[in-house]
Image 1 (cartoon, rainbow, N blue to C red):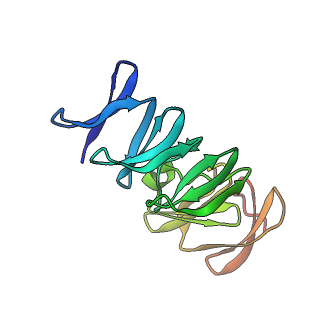
Image 2: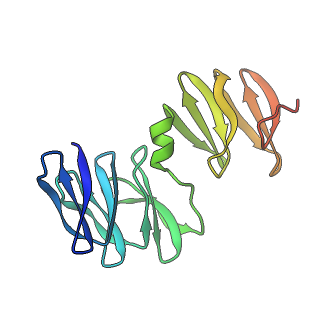
Image 3: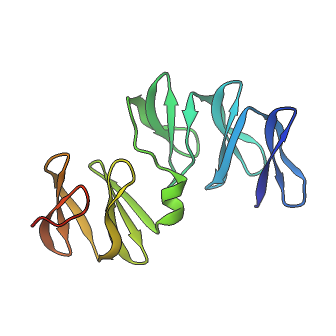
Length: 176
């Protein structure tokens, strides 16, 4: 279903491509639909609606992110965790910071795997590696497989690159 944000009386809602209202303009803020749900802010708190406009996860979070691979990052009382599409906390809100399962990554890469503070990404059949801030360390252009073996320091990572152990720096340069 294609939808658009609309604003009326300083509140946000959604309409479909025919102009029919999907969700009334009752929200302080809204985001895109991702995996069938959109994060919406009402009375200062975030929750989620489905594509029919029904609130499926209550607006109880201080902050919320879009769904990616079935999970969304949420913040409650200054701590971060993750929920699934039913609103169940699959990772409790106990962390000072959480990795962002964000729609930008899901939309750009064909496959995403989170491991040891890094993200393996696949594009057009080849793997690459991102750091904790979504910066590409290794572009997904050449490698059939990448496996993070050990984080050596903030600057170096030991990986299994196409079947051989290799050390790369934070800029993706192969050291050995």
